[in-house]
Image 1 (tube, rainbow, N blue to C red):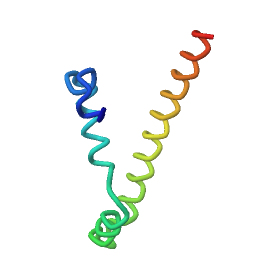
Image 2: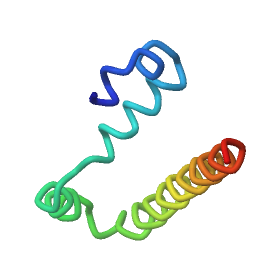
Image 3: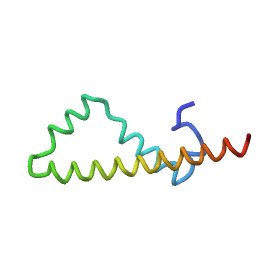
Length: 77
């Protein structure tokens, strides 16, 4: 089942935000190349900084989900 069809995500505000963020982040290599080419030289540094901040936020989300998954697996066993 696709995440976007999961009612527990699709029908909650937090789930909708997550689905939108995932959609916006799923860009292929050609798409990233076009985005890089579109950033004017005088904005490259700030866009790079913002991209790193986004990457850090995604990493934090992944870490928290991994922790919850690990906690759930220890409770069962």
